[in-house]
Image 1 (cartoon, rainbow, N blue to C red):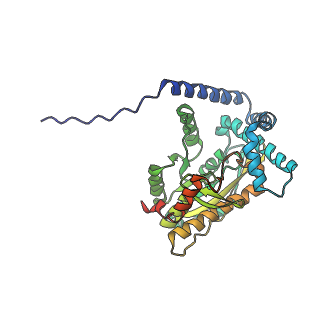
Image 2: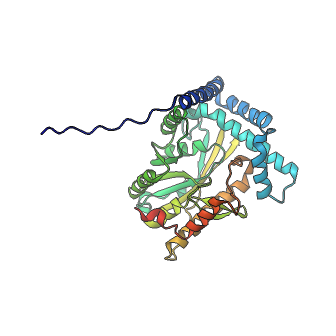
Image 3: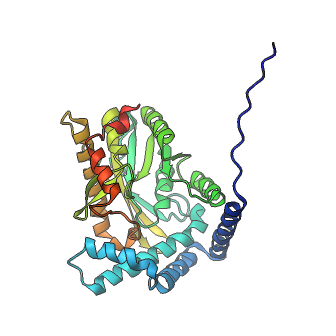
Length: 330
């Protein structure tokens, strides 16, 4: 009796309307990239900043950012809030322009655009047998931080959330792997298993930890609980991996200062859920300290907090006592 190899089902075809919309979006994105490539990196960055603060800051897109700033800095008056808001849009406009020039923003070469300090805090191989998380947030141009790590010989992967548009995402993945860590790992169960494997081999895993996570646990951030991923804390506790925070500051135009800080001390009470919550809070406290230093260089347009009576918030509170489940599957 002949045996036939089972056929792998083909991926579902994309509906025409969605495909058409994605193509139109991608055309707009690549047109913007092409425009900024007409200029050198410094001129492009400056034009992007001017567009951000001149044309975007005055629009309704600033509403959520303004609300977040007022809640985070009750001591600041309206003029100070608007100054930070304008600076944030200047930075985001520059980030958009700099996507066209990521190949030129590195810590090495004849004209290094990234200054790296705190390298003494990068643990040697013998001290990171179970790997290390490099945790940070959306500071300045966050895309250049994995590039700095790679330029200094750190190997491993960067955790990313794939962009919905497949054409744009394909370009971003190629750009990120060419300039940053060699491997990209998507969020989700499969990604977590891959992260586990990388850490067990003593590799570095870069992760931004400042966005709201639907599966997160509530920890303090600017005086209000924010839903935060417990993944780096839970895995670090389970494996004995290190958590090394790093920051990024725009120091003029398209030039940056990336700094590695001392590893965050792992709590060890014997209660994994409690330790995970405390560790996650310590990581988030680091992010808040850096944001306070340069508030105009952080992403205030993100819906980082949720109302106390929101279903998502209630779900997170219910999950807080079971935080250890994040790593118990491995």
